[in-house]
Amino acid sequence: MTRITDKSWRYAMGRRFEAFTDEVFQVIRWILLVGFASYLAQTYDPLIFDVTYWLLAGLLFAYLASRFLLRPEIPFLAKPATRGQRLLQTALNFMVCVVIFALVLWGVGALTQAIAEYRRAT
Image (cartoon, rainbow, N blue to C red):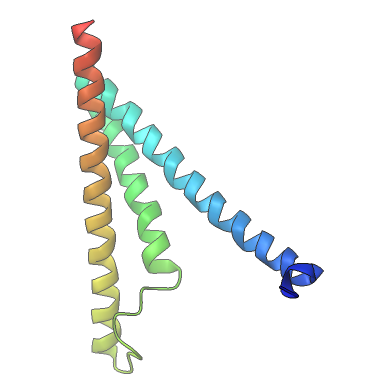
């Protein structure tokens, strides 16, 4: 309880919370952009909407990869000492990124398809 009255501790916690909420906002913003592009690609025929969707999806993948690969990795191996262990560590983190990306695209696709079908029905 004494930590809450410490100004430097509160400041540090505030900075961490701000950084976390900023990251969450960035991911949500990217997902909304990809979702809107997906909606346009599903609703209208021009190829430009498909290209836009896949370009934005690629940028979303790059952003997610930067979160899991370029910043501190998920430590699957305790202390990877050899080059092979480091490569395995990176490959596992890359797979996590691919799985998260696939789940996000699946969710965005399902949501935008439901929205498009609803809009066509009304």
